[in-house]
Image (cartoon, rainbow, N blue to C red; front, side, top):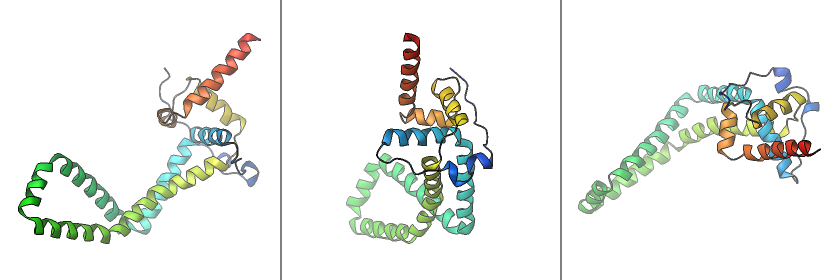
Length: 190
């Protein structure tokens, strides 16, 4: 098994050249579109990471209080959910002994969370906007020969990268590996 390597940062001329290297994907051929997206995710993964960090920081600098508030709310809800899941008996007992107070607390917490919803939306914007930009670039960017060669090496297991591991976990690499195996078998038969 190959060791995990961080993909190099591609030059700006390679990552975002003129419009001649971008084209609308064929939406009728989803397999080909998926192949283009996966190939570009593998080839430009370091550029995408830098892009995501920059966009997240820009959103954070434009609304730092909302970003922090959103992160605090999401973390609090997660921690509260874990605590409630582990302490069902305590909550049930409190609810039975103090039903009015329980309803009042649920209403206060609900109001508090809804009032902080704007911060959550800013946090989600900071997370989802980079993902949207990455998907748009990966969908529209045509592959070049260097991109195809790097992806073949990744698919064949000669190289491993963080994005390759993530895509493999999502089941996106098996198809490429099967294509390479079929190609090699056909060449051996000739």
